Length: 240
Image (spheres, rainbow, N blue to C red):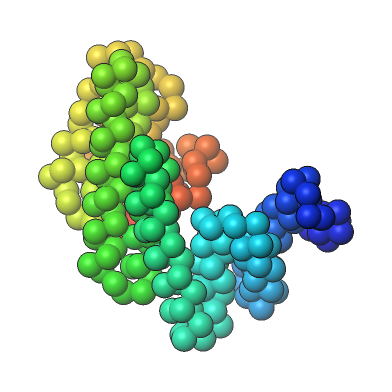
């Protein structure tokens, strides 16, 4: 990270170095967090946050803010935790709305789901529910677009994510319908790739099979984004 910082200038290339430095600092923060060294993790996330703010990477800064909040939470500093988590939740929701209006429906869904998780950490269950509903809605809308384009595999995956977002907020009937439809698409169109894996996971979750859900999750986890992993973890919480 320090190497990239030293190469940063006011040029476009300099901005790229700032971005790389911020990413490396966040990675270092993640390592310290796993080691439960929350003070050092916080220092890394704080520096990453400043870098992302400097180059106007709004969503990345929100991710840093959320991670900083988790550090403060573990350090027993409630005021700092709530302030930073609220900042992250509001930013995710705002950016999700912008992405949805621009037609970037999957990005919108992921941002809304991130916002939902952040609001839950604040015990704001109304916003938690609303944001996951918006996430499910955006996934579903994109699935319908993909069906019109006959991209059945990716449509099945998006329906599966919509199902899991609904399951996360206990909209079980809606979740089951979407999960069943996703698997039916895979079956009818002989889909056996990573899209099927997501459909199988959503079906296991909606069938309330914790053992199979965790087994399937472990199999595909390395191919999922951090936001997608948070969605699945929220679903698994509902299976306990």
